[in-house]
Length: 188
Image 1 (tube, rainbow, N blue to C red):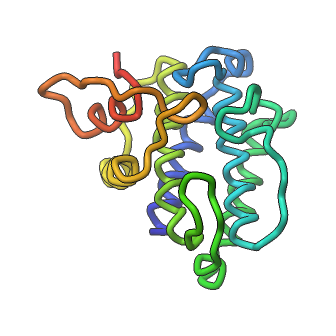
Image 2 (cartoon, rainbow, N blue to C red):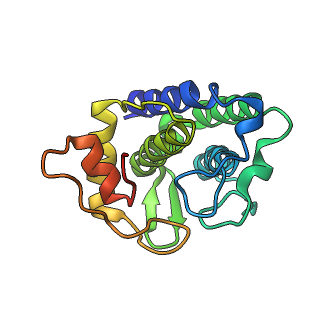
């Protein structure tokens, strides 16, 4: 699963590196969040996963789901901040760390290793959110889409700051479009 997570991080990296300097304030597909807010949220998620993996206390909520302005997590160089957070997170995901238990609102106590599918889902959705906001034709990794769709069907939380209502995809829609519609996103 860690190889898939690395691929999800790679996909996010490929999109976030394409954000022009003046586009961080563009609206995203996440209601009330800019492209920078989406990036800040994903950066926050890297720190959050690392602290779950290491057992460190961490009370930072600026990038949490539903927070008003996660872009504050980006720092002065969003790509460098993302890459540093990604690197420190991945380095913390040892076999011992993946067996550690973390407590999550709405999910309860789960092994950190079980959270990798959640993080893949977050990366896949937000890769598309940023790419779509930039006008890119985003083709998500099919295997990652399958993991994200499976996790979402079992765990999605529909409330403001998390996921909106499920949309109805076109009848001939592929898996990416169907997964995005399930997460409240429309590919058009």
